[in-house]
Image (cartoon, rainbow, N blue to C red; front, side, top):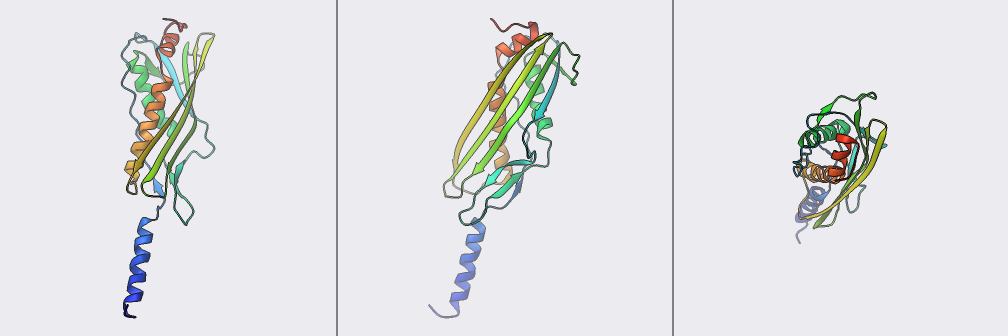
Length: 198
């Protein structure tokens, strides 16, 4: 190879490798509410709703792994508890309840906790994309309480470097599915009348 081409080839190779490296991303989330709910257990009853984010690093969503470099962080500037609360409120409405601001004195109360959320994009092509969301809830009706847990593990495989919007779609989907697992007819019946039976 002529001497003049060697630096050019080296520069091209460096550019290609740099183009393959994953870089930090800031993600904006907007999960949908699960849409399977249709039974009007609530009959318009009020439920005080809050969502608590129990994660230590509230801006961290996961990492984008690189072969020969440190993983690139995947973060959000949003308040994740507020984002999840919007979707959780829509599920309550689907069950016929009226979500209201939090009050310790409310007869019906629902606390949803975000216990963990982690999204990982692998370095090798095709890239493994894994998302885990763990939620828990405490429902209160009068002097009774009901505790539930839900975990969603999602795995995908893609052949390209995902954009922030694409990563948001993976995370939004996992949050929606976790909420779908957390909510149930038992939870709705309990909030309606303090019972979980049919």
